[in-house]
Length: 336
Image (cartoon, rainbow, N blue to C red; front, side, top):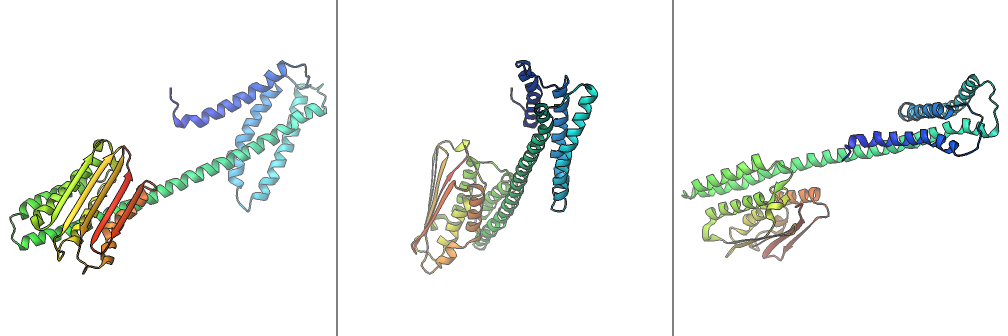
């Protein structure tokens, strides 16, 4: 049977205190040691020590854990030890007027509160450290989530800007392809608006989105560009990926590889094997285009930022540019 996480910490406390209450009777029952202490002394004092532990851990230390109150806290600890000593002596003599104090039972009476206070102090420091790290992780996750949400929000306007330019070009040509292009665009927008908000998105749907985008570009450019797309590998349906992560690379190829480029071509390859995604996009472009423009697009920088956030240490991105051919190679270890 699996224990609920909320019960683990209380269970550990109960186990520790049960052991503390059980150890003295077990030890003393197997020895001939005579402590001279009244019957049930260890039971009642250990119950007191349990209360003392939580008093220090949850009231004294949290309330006095400030630079101004530290002196008061360090005065309170020895005061508690001394008061515990006199209180125990008082109640012992009340229970057994014939009690005789010696060095052995004096140590039993005096030192447990010291150990309990020290243990509760260490416990409180450790718990505070754990809570602080937990809060820091939560804040970091919130910051990353907000940054990721912002980056995702940039994808749609950037995509729409480029696609609207495509639609305008078709409209100017009075092309019959305008209507099917708009229908294809509406499918892509449905994907972006309603399906891509999930944190774990099927790789198969991302590939469908990529193929739809390519088909939309085919409608626009037709035979003006040598476009080849190769998708291979198995296990695609079992893997997930950050949505709209791959298309910006293809989008960049169409943006910079079409126009005054002679015999333009675009090659898109995607392979998935055992959770390893290998994706590459290459295109030729005119030397008259600035290589600086090739490397400083909103879309590509957006993708790089999302990769850093979502796949730290699990991706390799290589961008090669020899002045005529621009190539992007992306390898990611995907959760499958």
